[in-house]
Length: 218
Image 1 (tube, rainbow, N blue to C red):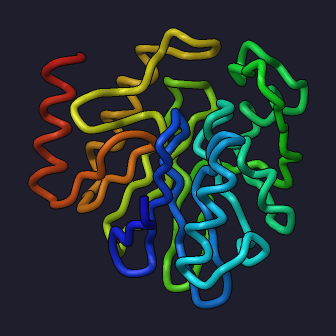
Image 2 (image 1 turned 90 degrees about the vertical axis):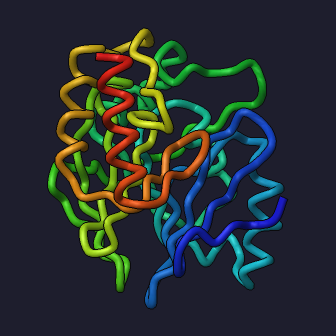
C-alpha cells in the first residue's frame, strides 16, 4: 500500500495489520509523526519514508494521542526522535503497566517519553501549528491535535467516522468522552484524521458526522 498524501505535506501511513493510522507532517525545518503504530508497522514505515525520500532519522518528533500499544510501539524505528505524550498516560508507560497499555505477548517496546503534552500547548511545525486539546474518555490522558488555520483535527481514539472510542478499558469514561466530543464539535473542522478508519474531508461532512455520533451514542 503506497503512502497517501491527504493534503499538502500531510501523509497517511496506513498498514494492513491492527496498527493505528500514523500521520506524517512535513514541516520546513522538521518532520513530525502523530502516533506510530505496532512493532509490525516498522517495515512498512521504512518503505513509506523511502517514497518520500526520507529516513527514520529524519523524523524529529512523535506526538502521541494516547498510551495504548498500537499507537507507540513503532517508535522503536525512530531512534533520533523525541516522544511526547500526556502525563497521565506517560506514567503508565513508565511503569510498564500491561493492563493500561494493552501489552501483547509479542516482543514489546516501551519508548522513553521526553516531554508531557499539556492542554493548549502549541507544537510548531512550520507552517503548521498543532494545538493540544485534552480529550479524556478513551483513556484519562487522551488528547487530540488541532490545526486551526488549516482546520485539521487529529482525533486519535476519541472520534471516528460514525463512531467513538471505547470507554471500557482502564481509565476510560463514557461521560468524559461525551464531554470531549462536545468540546471538539465546537471546532471548525475540514479534515478529520482519526487514529483508525477513514478520513473525513469537508466542513459539511464533519458537521454531519458530529450530528450522527451525538444522535446515536449520546
